[in-house]
Structure formats: structure tokens, C-alpha cells
Amino acid sequence: MNKDTVPQNYSMSLALFDLVPVLLFGAACLLLWKMTGSILILAGGIISFVSGALKVLWKIIVVVREKNVWPLFVQMRIGMPAGLTAVLAGFIFSCFTRDMHVFWGAALRPLPILFFILSMAGMAAMIRCSSRLDPSEARANWIEQSCNTLAQGAFLACMLFIYQKIV
Image (cartoon, rainbow, N blue to C red; front, side, top):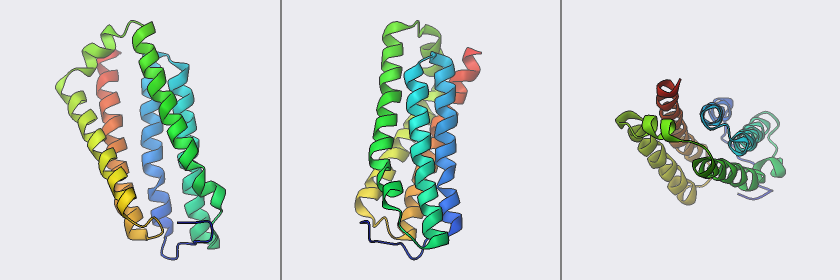
């Protein structure tokens, strides 16, 4: 995909479906922030959320105006890695600076581990699909966003199981 490509077969349902993993990840980051108190996790979650929401806006504009607003598309290449890096750095920093005994006691149980593994598998599937499929094709987007939704849903479930044991 380049700045001159305007996907022709995107639909509003595809654009709105793209919002689901954004919301799921945002909710999971909020829970992780509440459990760790890390401002880096909160900032990274917000950056990732905004980046994902801007990508959704890009898809809506593609559908409604049949226009490719390139900065809305390409920003995700910067925003998403930056946000995820901040979340990961915040979590690692929390592990070294806070008492995470209760968190790890809740996290190292079968259901959180299972859902974390499912989340990582979903992310790996999404990355594989995005490297092999044409992002201008609606079918490829449905596949990628289905993997992403499953991954983020599993990540949120993992955070919910941990959070429920902590509070």
C-alpha cells in the first residue's frame, strides 16, 4: 500500500470492526495500569489507543470519502510500536521498582497463562498475515483484524483474571 492507493472494497463494517481490538487493548492497558500504577503503561496504552483509533478513522474516510489520508495510515507504524514499547517498559520497570508479588501470584495461574499464550498466538498470527497479505484488500483486513480481536480479547481476559484475584 502506498499514498496513492485507495482501497476499493473496504466497508463500514470492516472499519468499525477495526475499533474492537483497539477498545479491548485499551481496556486491558487500563487494568494493567491500575494493577501496577505505572504511568508508562498508562501513557503507552493511550498512545496505542489513539494510534489504533486514527487507523479506524483512516478506514472510515476510505469508505465514506474514497480517499487515502496517508498520514492517518502511516502514523500507526510509529504510534503503535512506541505505545507498545512504553507499555512493556512500564511493566518491566514496575517489576523492578514495585512489589509485584501479588500480581505474579495472580498471573501465574492456569487461566491467565492460557489467555496470555492465546494473546501472543493471535498477535503472531496477525503479524504473519500482515506480512503476507495485501493490506489494500478487504479480505486480508478481515483476517488480520479477526486475529487482532482474538489476541486483544485474550489479553483483556488475562488482565481480568489477574485483576479479579488482586482486588
